[in-house]
Structures are given as structure tokens and as C-alpha cells.
Image 1 (spheres, helix red, strand yellow):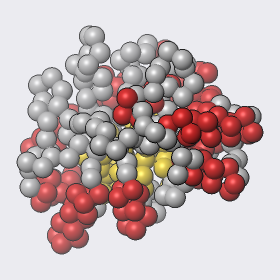
Image 2 (cartoon, rainbow, N blue to C red):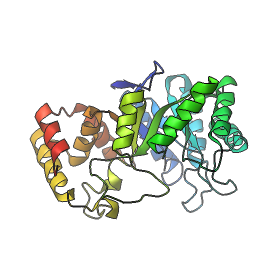
Image 3 (cartoon, rainbow, N blue to C red):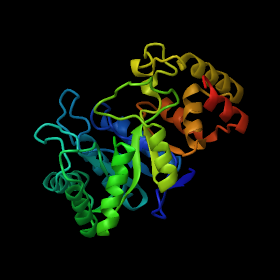
Length: 313
């Protein structure tokens, strides 16, 4: 599998990151194991999870996905060959929302225990916390890195100006900086004023920030839960704007030209965009996994990229 740089760390990660949001929760163990095995067989090694996954499902309380991922790594004896990202910040049963020192350190220890590992390769602030001083948050991450519990840190659901504030704080104190940002991002553009709260969508400010600062952009929900290809999954209301029809028409036309699915073209477009957006994808079936990974074989021309970019102006 193609790899891409993770910020300015000098580390390369898989160009397609496998999200585990429902593995070990909604998906049965055998299915979850098979999907992760097949991703690794295809050359992938970058897994994305979080402490809260997936507390909102019946019978779940949070931590299920981390636990299953840890069990899979132990059974496959492959910890040294995979790159694990997890997150802290959102609330789940028994844990409040925030990025205080105490919460970050306690949740990191829980995640390490669930996964049965010594170090999290990439640890995200899952959501911004304007009520906690940035110095307190970044100092907590610094302690985790110095203790060997975390290698790199990232942010998710952050505005560009807050990322710059965090960068300034880290540089002032000589602490680790956020090397990447994971944000809601897809081919369709949200209509002006649309809200995904508490999630945040990528915007032009964030794109400029990533280009200027060398911060890697990762895209979650890149396929809108199947809305590009499934008639039973409507386009979310936040994307229902004046340019939606034009962009969908351009997407479908390019998909026909390259003999690919619209989903594959969305992912291929991300990987050729500037800045590159590294997709975080989810799969519940072998067919979905094959379709997603098949995007790596889709070669878009400069002319096709221009048509996709410029559709609807």
C-alpha cells in the first residue's frame, strides 16, 4: 500500500487508514478479525480507534473497539507492524468531556490497558476544550510523550486558529506539537452556515493551515455513510446546497470514465488534493473493504481533478 508522511515526524503511514468504530461493538468478533486481517494483507497498517467507541450502541459502554483491537494484536502477534491511533476528549458513560490534565492521563492509561500495549503511536485530542487552558492540555501530552506512553499527538474537531494557538504554546515550552488534524471531510461541500456540532468540517482555513504548517489532514466520514451510492442513505441536510447536484454529476461522470464507483473516486480525489486528505474509512463487509481499497488503483488525470474541483464553481 502507498504510504504518506505523518506531518513533519519523518514517519510514513498507510495512505488509507482503517477506522474501527464498530469493530468489536456492532460487528461480531470473527467479522472484525477478518476485516482487519484483510486490510493488513493488502499492505495496510494504520488503525484508528477511540476510548469512546462505541458507547452509543446497545450493550456497549465505551472501550469495546480498543479492547478488540488489543486482543487481535495479541493473537496475531503483530503489534510492531501496525500503527495505532486513539483519542481522548469526548464524554462517555462515567467520563466527562474535556482535555484536562487529569482526564487525559487517566484515559490514556485506560486505553493502554484495554489494548494491552505500552505506547499509543498517535493520540488525538478528539474535540477542542475551550474551558481548559491550552497550556494544561499540551503539558499533559508532553508528560505522556516523555513517559513513553504516546509517540505523536494529533487534533480532531479543531478550528485552524486553535491549532495555531496550540502550536504556539508547544513551541514556547518545547513540548510536542499536533502533527495532524482529523476532521469531517468529503467531496461535497457543506452549505454555508451548516453545523455538525460537536463535530467540525474541514474548511478553507484548515486547508491553508495544513499546507502552511505541514500538518497532515485526515478525513473522517469521507463517504457520508454510503450516501454517494446507496438510495436508502440520503445526502445529509448539511450538504444540501446549490452546488450539490453539479458536484454529484461531475463525480458520477468521472466514475464512469475511470470505471470506478463514486466512492472510489471520492477517496482517490482526496489522495490527489492539495492538501492531501488521508481517508479514514470504515467497512462492515468484505465487499466494502475491497471497494475502499480499490480507490488506490484509481488514477485521476489533471483534467478530471480540475472538473471535480471546479464543479459548481
